[in-house]
Structures are given as structure tokens and as C-alpha cells.
Image 1 (cartoon, rainbow, N blue to C red):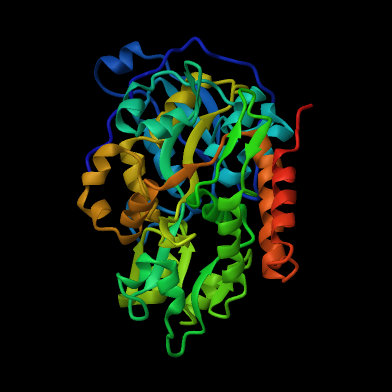
Image 2: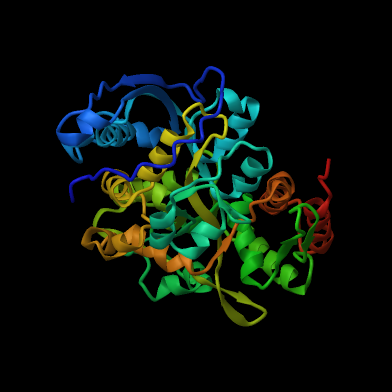
Length: 439
């Protein structure tokens, strides 16, 4: 891996006032890094400023990856932050780390943004809420970021002329499968997967059917849409149309099929895969390592299969977005926080995250890295990403869509929704999705 280089210093006129900082999660480790300026002209011309930065990330980013590479030590995030500190003699940074998943960032920051992290990771569907509520800071110095990441990833967190995040990984799901049970040809079609009689394997296919992140795929694949007005509030949704009914019937057929296992929050799908009871499993790169360990030489992954919609094979879409580094607008050290966010989303850190955790990168040049190109899960993610419907960055979507789709899927799984009442339940689902949440 190439040697880390110093980032270009950002504009220094953006210092805002904040109160004391507190941790988001259960972990509250503090790492002190005393970095004095050394060497050449830099040491004589740069005034070092003592600052503190709090960084939130998922637990996995703060795990011990020394067995992968000793340089990562017992905390991958700390390794990245300390490398940043060494590259920036203008700051002597004391880092504070706390655990907060990308999906929980807005929830935690909305409790008391001024007491939140300077730099945090967040899922793209939270962008509107973070921006609308004045929590996310518009970022400067993003020329390299914009040039080296895909347009969709940047546009998803851009409002007007301002961009509020640094992308670091695509966030969607695809199909893992046991290639001793299913062939490359088999997994191209969901009907084919479900038609197989696999000795010793009770379940051909598993996914979380009562979760809108997954079951919405059937509706979007069938040609349904959800749209929002300029305020991202009043939605139009046609999940109860003829296409929506076709999609719902595919879901209902799965729910009633003995060869289907509904995954859940206890990860019964992955547990069953490990026991050899499942042939194909829907998930993302976050499960790459346990799936690879479970399947061994039979480990395989690919894009999602096609589904049969009214006699026509349709490529199964997935719902997804990207994950980002964001900066708290309340930070006392916005200039340093912005530089750190850009660093943590840089080519170097994306490669470190891939090597340590298997997190797929968004940085364009890394797609040519041999290890990245040869990674089975990353290749499957890239293949599926072209069929991904970007989750609307909408408060309305978060408020209405998820519970409505959960109820729809759960009703099918528990038998409350049948062919006789499915249209009525689709109408109710659309009503729940489109109910105004304006204050």
C-alpha cells in the first residue's frame, strides 16, 4: 500500500462554538496523540493548536484487526485517525471514540447535536434529516472526493450547491449462495432457485421478507415507484397498482413456500446457512466474512436473481444508498473535522477498511486493485449496484415507509394476509406510506 501523504489544509475560518462532547454508544475510549511539528520549514512556520475531536463509528471500525495486519493494532479507527494526526502538524489532536452505527447517527445526534461527535458515519437515507435540522456541516475541499467517487454517491448528499458527506462504501444487498447446492445458472432466476429439490437442505432461499429494505425490491422490480415533492413530504406510491399486486403475490408465494425461510433480527438466515440448511441467502458485504467462513470452498455470491412478473422475467432491484462521513455543524473545530472526514473517506482509508473488514470501496481507482477485483462479495455488490434504487433521503420515507412495509411483510409471513385480502392490505399500505407527516 502506498505511503500516506499529508492532506491539503482546508480553510481555517469556520470555527463554531459547541458544548461538551459525549459518546453515542457504550464504548468511550480516549486516545491521546502528542504530535509536535518536526522537520524543515514546517516546524518553524506552523503553529500547533491543541484540539479534541470526537469520532463516532460502528463497532466494527473500532475492532482489533492486528491479525490481518499488525499496523492496525487493536482499533482500526484509531489507526486511521492517528495517521491523520501525524500528517497534520498544525493540530495536536486528542481523539475520543464512541460506538454509533451508521443507521443510528441521526437518532443520536438529534438528541443533542451540540454534544455529539465532530465526525460521524451515517447512512445516506438520513441526509435530509441531518441537513434540514442543521446538524450536518456543508463540506469544503471536496474536489478530489467528487472526482474520484461516482456521481450518484455525491448527488445523494448534495443540496443546492452544498455537499454534506464523503462517501466511503455502497450500501445495498445481493445474493450469497452455496455453489455445491446451486449452480451459477440456477441463481439467475428466483423461480429456478425455488424449484430445486436439494437433499439435506430444507430451505432454498432466505431473506427478511418483513423488512422494507428487502421486500420493497419486489415492488420496484415490478415497475412501481414512490415519489416526493420538493419538501420530500407528500409521497405518491403505486404499490397497490396492477404491478404492485403482481409483486405482492410473489412475496405471498414465497411466504407460503416451505422451501423459503424468512430471515429476522436474530439472523436466523445466516445461522441456518452456517448449519447447511439454506442454499441462498440475501445480505450485504457486512456478512461477507461469516458467510465465507460458513461456506468455505463453496462460497459464492452474485447479483440478485430475476423474478417473474406477469410472465416476464424482471431483474430484481435492491433498495440501497451509500455510507458517508459527516461533520457536525456544532463542532468547535470544523476545519480539522472536515479534513478528518475527507481523510477517513480517502483512497488510503477505503483500502484499509477493505483489507481489514472487507468493506467495498467507492473510490474509482480501487476498482482496479487486484484484491478488490478478486473479492467475491465486492464483485457481487458492484454487479447489483447498477440495479439499486437509491433510498429517498426523506424524513417522510423514514417515518412512514419502513413500518408500513414491515406490517405488509409480517402479515404475509404470519398468514394474516391472503389472496382474498391482499388488495385491501396493499391499499392500506399505500395509505400509510403517503400519510402526511408535515408539522
